[in-house]
Image (cartoon, helix red, strand yellow):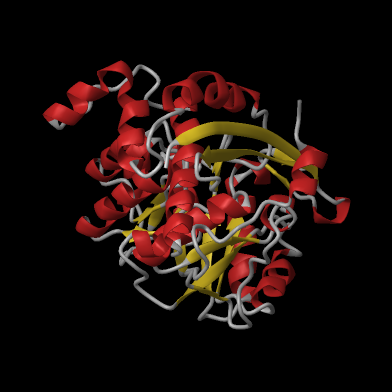
Amino acid sequence: MKITNIEAFWLSCPIAKEKQHRSDYGLLTHFDMTLVVVTTDTGLQGFGEAKAAVGSSGSCASIVSCIENELKPLLVGKDAGHITRVWEHVYNGSRDHYALSRGRKFPILGRRGLTISALSGIDTALWDIKGKSLGVPVVELLGGSCREKMPAYASGGWANADAIGEQLKSYTDKGFSGVKMRVGVMDNSVQESIKRVRAAREALPDDIKLMTDAHGTFSVPEAKQFCRGVADCNLYWFEEPISPDNKMGTAAVRASTDIPIAAGESEYTAFDVRDLIAERALDVVQPDCAIIGGITEAMRVSSLAHVHQLELAPHCWGSAFSFMAGASVAFASPSANVIEFSLGGNPMMYDLVEEQIGVDTEGMLHQPTRPGLGLTPNWDFVNDFKQS
């Protein structure tokens, strides 16, 4: 199969007012994503997501330009089945023949950021194509599923201290055995974040996993203070306590507490995750398939988690395509225990595709069974919300 075309669409869809929430990113009124479509000479198409921002909104114009004007000319005519070779070609550029012949990287200057995000969408689409061509789900191509089903945790939790318990209980009422809430600068003070977490823990049964996510907004002293204030709340993890730019600071926070530290959603490539591990900065690794370098690089991160005895928990806050990419990696990884499931207003998870994505009444996500990623774009939705 030869690649004949690569397209990228910036989709921006308004979120219904009753489903909007406010966090450190402000009031979320729209959900943005970049849909990547790879077409082959056999007529098969694969789909992926490339992210311009870790959050739910942001301009995707630069991602679209990178894919269509820089990467497409490099890749048209390449064999769609040579996924790793395509990955190395984009990462190493004109020196990829040296990289492949000598077994080490000769990376281009853009080996982080925009180029890797763009590559992420293409890589995921190629895995989708390979699964479809063979009639098997992507997870089978990754070595098969390690489990038949996996507990999902409800990702949300923006309410104030008086309402956070009720908000999180509305998630557990749907069957979820784990919930995640946001903390950090959105609360204006460390004490307010502590107050909200303590209110949440008091409202939830002891057997419910409670995670917190600061979106990298605390300083190191603030993160340490927060950890002391919630030390008796039995947190399953504390996610992105401080800026991802400060790996040593994240390590200092981890060294100060018994609460497991999670990070990785903002990282590009397994090399960044390797550095976090080397700094002893985390307990839970969270690659995002739409940022890290696609399914290919997420599996490399999975191997790092496995050999370092760390938990793998892919960041799955995005469209249905990056969700299923992350879920495929999680099901194929022996290091994964839970999977993130967005409870925010997310039209890209539900309205973008023809299929329904959901968990059962016990909050369990079942292993993928449909060929490829198992998803079909709703082209009416795409045409309604694509940006020029």
